[in-house]
Image (cartoon, rainbow, N blue to C red; front, side, top):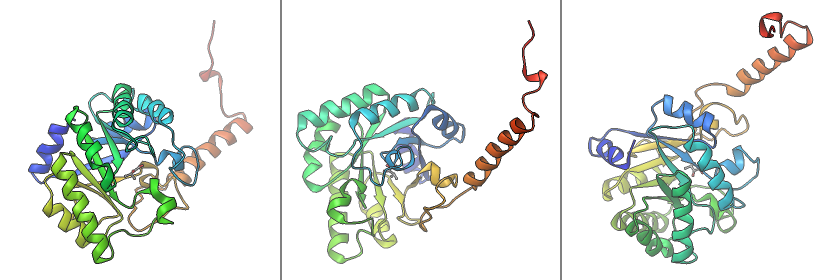
Length: 263
Ligand code: KIV
């Protein structure tokens, strides 16, 4: 899947699906499910590292996980998150850090964009690095926002989101993630800009959807916001399988001679 194919789906008004992966095993499963892209999201700080925010993510961590995801897919587009403060400080740092992610295997990078970042985003695109913007709730700015509550609820916030989305579209991002914004706002943004909108908690009026795969698989039992749909009870199913293994070992049902080797 290339960005050109994403755009073909967008022009044909076909929904685009994006799921997160942090390792080759999950990336392979996502490719088998024929999703349109794999996001190496900095949500891995929650799901992989068990931390309470994404702020502590380092570029080295993202490079490591991007390399692993690359080894799990053959043709699916990989988007790597640029960690907190690895973009936006200077053009040189932004370019160098994005280039490292592309060299690690990403097709494109995603940035939680503020208005002052737009010139640097434009520069990345000029240098041939595809960028996905991420607006609305921006978990990297949790300390400023004080929480993960809805963005765009007031007229002024909605207008600011619209202005930023337009700027991003104008400088040529290939897509914009809208996280936890009201449905009417996401619809207006979708209709106003010239690239796909990928929603998470933004309702049904986006060009596509992204979810964290651990949420989809029911592996995050203590996290059930209404924008998540769980397609299996992964926690229960995996714990049952692990218990069955333990039970078999405890009772000497496994391994048997059939699992052993002869000389
Ligand atoms: O880090 C992440 O996984 C993300 C998605 C939830 C959009 O940014």
